[in-house]
Each structure stands twice: as C-alpha cells, then as structure tokens.
Length: 558
Image (cartoon, rainbow, N blue to C red; front, side):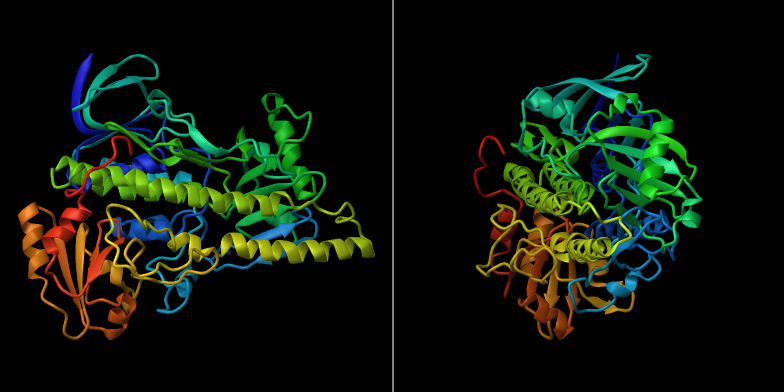
C-alpha cells in the first residue's frame, strides 16, 4: 500500500470540498481530495448561486468564468407559478437576465449594493470550474472514483485509508487534518459519533416527504408553453405539483415532483417519469429522461459539533436543507471560505488553537440560522393548498386563480428577493471577532442594512465603474485607512510582519467610504469579514493576538 503525506485530507468533492481545496492551495497548503463519485455532478442539483458566493468567486478570480455558464445571457431568471406549465399562469416574480443583472448591483445605494449579482447556474457547471482551478494549484491533488474507507485521529496527525472504487489501488494517507465534506450520509461524521439535530421528516402538501427528481431534455417545451420563459417554474394544482429549473435555456430542465401515495420510486420507469412531466406540463410533449432519483424534503438539520480533534466537517455533512431559497450550496461555500484561511493559519503556526475552533462557533450558528429561513420558505410554499376549482374555466376558478396568484407573488418575493439572508449572516460573539460595543443591525430576510460593526460582511462600495472596494482588499488580511487624515498604521504593519501574516494596507480618502465604516481604521479578515475597527493602532499586538486565537483558552470540544 502506498503511503502519502499531506497537510489536509479532504473527503468529498462537492462544492464545499472543491472550494476548500482552492482556498488551501492558494495559501500554499498541500491537500488531497478523494470522492467516490466518478466525477463532478452530472445531475443539476443546486441551481442558484447567491451574490455573496459570487463575491467569493470574484475574490478567487473566476466569477466571470462561472457567469458565462448556465443560462444564455439574455434568458430571464423569473420565478413563475402556473396551474400547469401550459395552463394558466398564476404569478410571476420578474428578475433580470445575466446580461442585465449587474444593473441591480451597480449603485452604491440599496440592499443589493454588491461586487457581484446572483447568478442562476447549475451546480454541475460550478463544480467543473472549481475542480479545474483546484487541480491547477501546486500541492493540490483531486481524485474522483476513490473512497475513504476508515481513519484514525492519532492526536498530532490523522491516518486514513483510501481506495479506488474497483479495489485496484489503495493508499494510506497521513495528514495534519482530515476534513469531511462527504455529504448527508457522511462516513466522517458518523465515524466521529456526531449526530444531526433539528427537524426531519416534515410532511407538507408539497415540499415534504419523498420527492422525485428528473433531469430531462425537452426543447419542445418552449413551443408548447404559451408563456414567457422563466428560470424557476412551479405548478400549483391538485394532481401533480412540481418545481422545475431551466438548466441551459435550450431544453434541459431539473424537474422535481412530490411522490403521491402508492408511487414507488424504485419502480418508476423512464416512461413513468415522462408521464409525470407531461402531467405537470398539461400536454403530451416528448422528452428525453437523462437521469432520475428520489430524495427527501423536510430537512432542517445541523450537526451538534463541527470539529472533533483534528477532524472537521462542513457542507452537507454538517447541515442539511430542504432546498428552498437555494441556501444549502451557498452555506457550504461559505463554510469552505471560513475554514480555509483558519486551517492555513493553524498549519503555518501563526494561529492559536482558538482560531480553528472558531470555525465551528461561527459556522454552526449560521447553519442554524439558514436552515430556519429555508424551512420557513418551504412551509410557505408547501403548506399552501390549491383550491379544488383552481383549474376550472368558471368564475369560481378565476377567483381561485386570483387568490393563489396574489399569495404566490408575495411568496416569490419573500423567497427570492433575500439580500438580508444573502449578506446579513454575522459572527457576533465569536472569539475571532473584536466587538467595539456597537449594536449589530437586525437580521432581516428581504432587507440588508450595510454595517461595519465587527462580525459581518464589510459594507460594499463602488470606487469607480466596475471597480469594487473588495477588489483592493488583499487576499489575506486588509487594513483600511479611511478618510482625509487617517491615523498611522505602523503598529499593525510591524506586528503583522513580526507574527508572519500578510497585511495589505489600503488608503481610501473618499469620505463616503469613511462614513460607511464609521472608524478610520478597519481590519478585514481573509474571508472578507470585519474583524475590528478603531481610532488608532496602539493595541495592534493585542488585537492580532485576539483575532488569531493566541490569547485565550478554548473549550476542549468545539
């Protein structure tokens, strides 16, 4: 058996694992990633990339590459509700195409002031980009069609065994840390004895219990449906409720429907799947079934711990969502961003043990927050039952459609216009944040209030057309010196050099930026979170000691 040594072993090659490999590789950390799947995802899975996630892709330099994938640039990203796709349109929440999306974020005002707008792109495309960039980094190895068979935490290192799925090759891996991003049935989580807490098995009229996913190709859909194209298409009737995302804008769709009593997912043939789709469309349109599988809606689960010794979990291994609001995949990406710089700091010896432990403190609280929001969206859509006459060509049917339309339009705005959820997650109370005593903004769903109170996303600002404030941040730590006459930053510069961290010092005299941040000196963490702000650099040594986990005791188990 071959033996291999790396800094980090990553089990799982979904968005979390691949993003983590990118974060580590760019910091000179060696990592080996193994995933039992033959390759990156074939099925569309998650289909919405939030603006905050796109900001992180911009930070890594490939946001434009991802924005070119998925739907055509001029394809509308509306959310539309129908009795059946070729029947009555009940409501439509209009959103801009990718070509027009930057208009929503181009202003320095409003809740959507951001470096990047959201993008409607299937996870299958995103994973390919993440993989290609990870594989291009020195010290990063990515292996699909391999599985982790067992591991042992030896205290100073983790020993693990991996093998090809066909058994033709095996390796023994010695790593400083093991990270489990191996999905909801994570063998790493189970091996640690970590359990999920929260809600599962929630039953609803729709979006609860067993669902059936069909990846299909139907170019004729656009010819038989007498309505404008939409990115997300939902049916609302008593017979076959479904939601369906456009994948490529040319005829590929990710179709999901609730399994009815008596429908056995193991017995569903391609012809059965085709009939499910045709029932939702309302006409007999032909389609090609590319794949099909069952899954369970009704989860709002978060692991009780994210770390145990030198083993850490993230992504679906740490939290499981019903996919309302697109929060699962985006939460996983932020897990990787948070963990990556902290692992690198621990491996390079610049951080105390409390910094790495803060990953669990910060990300578990956000996972609880986000699963709560997703559950509320699923309840709003799934518990609203259509009136029996909603498809009737009668006055009662028209009334039912108007009532449903009003409800669904309001629901669409609640679920898909969510800058508060997108940008508003905070790490208040974390040991890796230094509070200045100011009150954080209220955590709202559909409104985001920019705030430089330490613990949250830095307020965004366009310095010039196309030039974001985030573009001048360093890849690691950033110290902003703001206003017409900011204090000297020599204390932070010399302390950063002494302890061995990269610190970019950015001088911005624009008084509008200074007003946003409310203090002349602001420290931004590598994950683009406000860590500290103040009026002088007199406490630079203590500030960095606190933020890097070097000056306090951490609990034995994070």
